[in-house]
Length: 408
Image 1: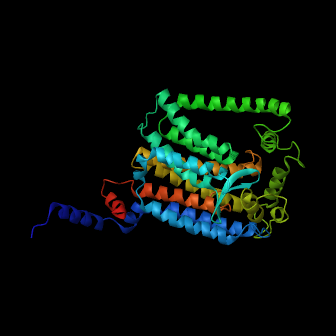
Image 2: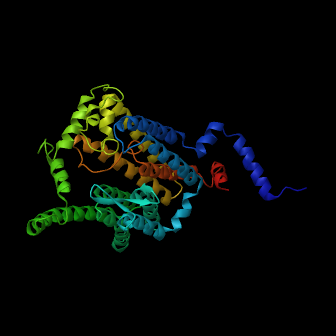
Image 3: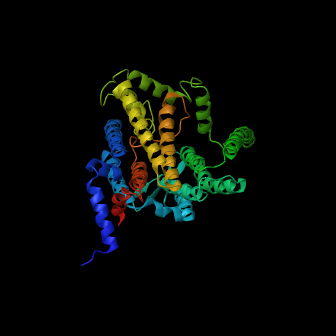
């Protein structure tokens, strides 16, 4: 019986794969360094969180573990799924994040936390929709920008894409949620930059936004004086800007939390005080230690060495993601990887930087480390996208047959 050409081709591929070393075949579909570094970060985070939640009845380790478990399931599904199929759904991928961001404003399901409606409660399940909007916005931005094949030079096209990406940014800041709004904005900027947007338009955009912020602050001062209440910018938001500009403006007042954060980090010394011995967080000198100020707990308990170990893991993770962005099969994949890198880099820079006075204080958690099941699920979702991009980076060559079999 004659062998058909298709079977002959399959047999030829099988013979070729036999000559490829096992470790090479494994690395062709599994980015072991990325998974190893991420696993170390997640385990390190669990260790710190388990200490930070001591004495806090609102936080439980089981909830954090649940977030990791759900995240791992989402990660497996997205790794198996071919990310390229998302490229054709730019508009729906942009509409869904807007709906998610506005969901907390719906009466009956929205939950107010610290003066802002960022949470929803549906059938007893409480979560942050804005977290789930992040990976969708990354996909939407990549789908929109990649349509121009790395040549977004037209001012008209640039303004159209920028305007569409700013819609979820404006919606989230109106809640108000400045921290998440900044993350959304970073995703949009990185997508535009990676997708080949004209550098001139990017510079003009930055200048216009900075000028608009300065004008907003000036106008808000006059409006507050006239109406004798906060109109546009809340007092605590103004105080955060003032503290960022002058860390020592009022150590016992508006800059109290920053002062305590610095004390916590400095008191850790070289090797720290040991697990469970973070006095600043344990005695209540710092707010939201399991989430926003988790780095202070780490620095106080494990010192300079423990802090540098965490930062080294993040740096290694960023270089691995950068490689994924450069080796992606198409512009769509490169933009997704670069946007994820930009998002995580901003999270790390802002979360650690605000505890040292290098960045304004905002409620931005530390990836894979801070407490929060919604945020943990988001991190594993984008990790699944990264692995999907890596597995399919060689589609069309001899290694690509290994990756494509995962989706057949």
